[in-house]
Length: 180
Image 1 (tube, rainbow, N blue to C red):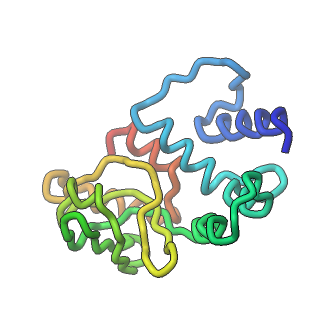
Image 2: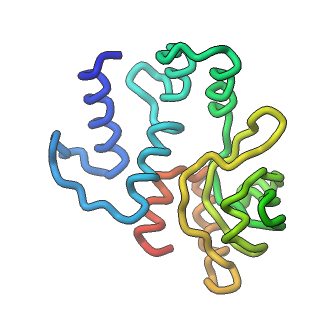
């Protein structure tokens, strides 16, 4: 894909993500604290290019950096992922967390280091989980974690949102900017 084609795709993606159909090249965007990482994640995992493919799929198929098959396998794994609200059920410091997908009730033991330093059971996080080899890992950007004990009514609000379908970073951007 040529550079100009990618520029057009990114402008199209920005117009969609930021709900700015009038956005012109070089225009100013007022960005919130989490807007850039959420946009980057959405483009990487969720945005569908005009050819019907997502970025990870395109990278895997094109292999522009001529990765070896074992190196390229990571990009195949990453294509299958789950984005959602996850309730932290258990934390083993420096090792991982047991997460419950609040939409399906499915549980995932996630190999994780950083998240174990700042979350405790009862927190809700939005993130992306993917199975890499034999382990589940969080592969999304950092967004706020909410302690259900401190934010009265937040679990009910999240469950209401989930009635509208599987969340994605675009939805989370609106929620975070609205201070959930």
